[in-house]
Length: 289
Image 1 (cartoon, rainbow, N blue to C red):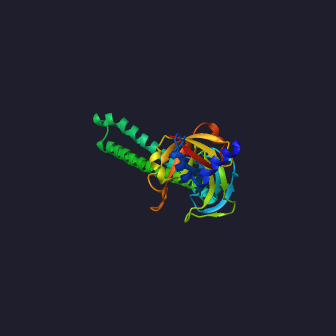
Image 2: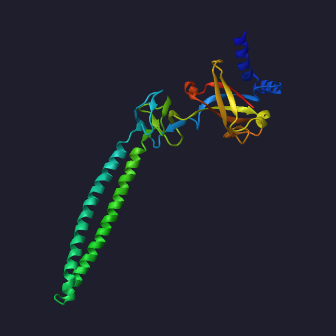
Image 3: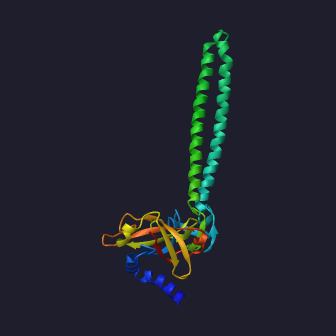
C-alpha cells in the first residue's frame, strides 16, 4: 500500500501539477510549495552541425552514439577542387619566396657596395658620378626587395585563404560529446541555401531539467531554490536540484506568447546521479520552501 501511495504522489503532479501543488501548499507543514514537469536536457542545448560549403558528402567518419572529442573530424565534403587551389597557391608562394630571396641578396650586395665606396667618395678618391650610380643601384634594390616582400605576403595570404576553403569542407565537432543522430550520407548533396543538419551532438555539459512553471507559483520560487526531482519512468528515483534560471517572459524562449500562462524554469541536477539520466527523460520537480 505504501508503494502505491508513493507512486500516486509522483503521478498526480504529472496530470494536475498546478492543482496538486496549490492543494498541498495550502496544507499546514507542506514540505514543498510548487511543482512542475520537465525534461532532461543539456545546459546550452544540443548542437546541430551543418556544412559550411555546398557539395557532395565524400566521407562520414562517425556513427550514432559515438563519443567524440572537440575538433574531431566527423565528415568531409568533396574538396578536390579546393585542394587543387591550395596546391596552386602553395607553388605561387614558393616562387614568391625565391624571388624575395634573390631581391634580398641584391639589396645586401648594393648596401655593401655603397658602404665600401662611401669613404672613398668622401676622400675624393673616386668620381662622384660613380658613387651616385652605386647609391642609385642600392635604392633600386631596396625598392625591388619591398615589392618582392609584398608579392610574398599576397601569395601567403592566398595560401591561407585556400587552406580555409579546404577546412570549410570539413565538419568537426565543436565540443566533446556524443553523436545522437547522423543525417549525413556519402553521396548526398549539401546546400547552404537552407541549413542541412548533418549531425546532432549532445555536448559534455552539465545536465539540466527544463520545464514550464504555472504563473501562480512565480512568487513562490527563486533562483537557487532547492527542489526534489522524481523520474517518471522510475518513481523510486529521487534527485536533488536547484533552480538555475527563471525566464523573464511567458512562453518558451524564442516562442514568446502573450497568452501563455507559464514560464520556463531550468534546474541543475546535483551529484553524479545526473549521468544516469537519459536526454529527454521526463521528471517531476517539487520545489522546497
